[in-house]
Amino acid sequence: MQPHDFWQELHPAGTFSSEPPFSGFFPVSLDDGRQLRLPIRPLSDGKHALASLIINQASFEVQDALAADLAKKLEPYRPEVIIGLPTLGLTLASAVARALGLPRYVPLGTSRKFWYDEAMSVPLSSITTPDQVKRLYVDPRMLPLITGKRVVLVDDVISSGTSIVAGLTLLASQGIEPVAIGAAMLQSVRWHDRLDGFGAEWRERVVGVFGTPMLVTAGEGLWGL
Image (cartoon, rainbow, N blue to C red; front, side, top):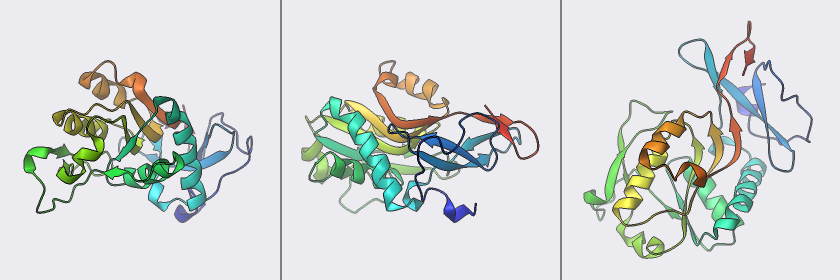
């Protein structure tokens, strides 16, 4: 497969084996059994790798399917507002809000507008841009939409947990506690410790479409669990 071929097509259930070893891609399944191929990204140690999802490069078919699956899983939490984490989480958050029948969603941002309040921001870094420390802002004009509401915080992928904790910290500073956290992919379990450090109750509030493991080398070009 070419890099631009990933995240473009959903395949019928059982098309790909979910048993290791894996070569070139890692297959994941939605609740209805349809499968999606994710590229495998080797880590710098040369011994481990992770499956990758860049949701704003996915086809609309795939984006809609992931949003519908996540929306269904979030329905029991009775969300009134979806809050999206930048940057890639905004694509999913918008689609999830639509799938839930909500009229809009509330995006957090990393670009400071002149009317923003620096006190309503926290530092933010991500696993894909570890050397770039930005600030995460909530638009003060959006606070009436989320204060006192049943909100869900949505990101595309939860990996290290850094972005989710930044989002929770920012919302907590405004007296807002999400009823759930949603993501398309739960990438390995590295985020557990960081989220547990924010509060032991949070891990059970995390909802994902699918989870992917840390992969290890299993021969030339092959990866195992």
